[in-house]
Length: 68
Image (cartoon, one colour):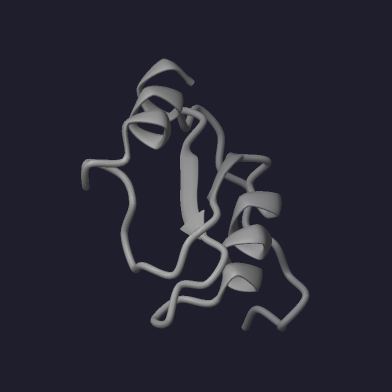
């Protein structure tokens, strides 16, 4: 049985992008930073209070995600 500190080893996955708003009322920003750190992903931060900023009329976020 795996313990709480065991980390699975997975190879061949593409790099992914985590997008988070600093004041997201549904998903706290700290959770996004933790998620981005674990697999060494790219974190795109949007300073705002909305939930969801990719493909939601936030052009600079969309551009960063699509070109990363």
